[in-house]
Length: 404
Image 1 (cartoon, rainbow, N blue to C red):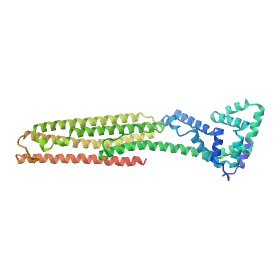
Image 2 (cartoon, one colour):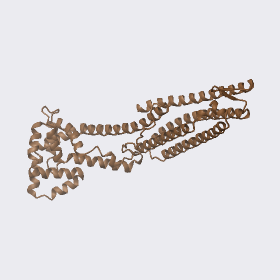
Image 3 (tube, rainbow, N blue to C red):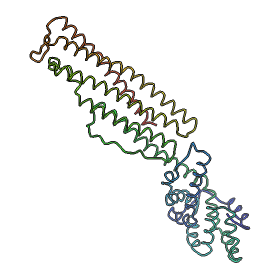
Image 4 (cartoon, helix red, strand yellow):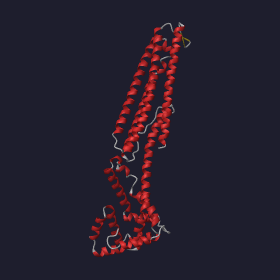
């Protein structure tokens, strides 16, 4: 930090230093000193340069500088730095620095310090050489005083701890942001589960956006997941409303099976249900394909890609397996209902409604009807079992996700 003959003085002073300091400085005093030296601004600039260097060298770990730097304000950096530095600077020397640094020679010293920190040593030397000889002499004498050397000594002795403090702070900030992003995703997963369990009303308000961390690959993947879950949830809510509107459960009501109007409406309802299920399945496939393709375009490390692709593949395989089984039950469920309608149409006038119940003309018709109803109930139970299996898997996935 010194430009002329003070390096030997600094070496002897450092060797003689004893830590920990028995009477450490007040953090408030050190905050003023750090501000005068411009250390906080210098550290902020260094962090920003580190982000720029990382982004050029490692695009797979690219960080959005504006987002990443938000918590690292000059004041916040000052507090974290001063909290550590205060343990290595005595109270007496801190008070002396607060008196000496505002003086003309102190201001020159801190200005050169800031040039060295924010530019480089050569720039500081060049500025030093522009000073009048008297000022250069006074500056070297000032920097050789125990008061200034105490600050230099404190900075050197505290360097490792200060770097650890700033590193932990940065790590904790990023982890907190990641937790917030994951919380937004978990909330959507939870809402989806509750809606399927009918634990929520119809007027559900969904978050519009997910908080960003500044780490590009994570933000892109998290945003894609968030948007996919949100779109899928809205699609499921829309599908649920559409199904409620057609009253699929009314198709096999006794009153519907014994009137021409009821039978015609029943067939149209089943046709509408088939179209709705097909369209919903196509929309789901489109959402999933869009998500998968977008994830594959994210720039990330090979290990990150391997983990994400593996997770998505496992999830997709489980979903597809359940969808195949679900669709088989669903096709059987709808087809069997069609057969009931066909039976009642072929026996129209012979199957009658009495006291709210169906009365059959022959035992054969009754047995055929009862057999179809049993098969419908079996298919319905199969659908319910597959849906419950899916709910259980997603519940476990949600709990695992919350623990990440």
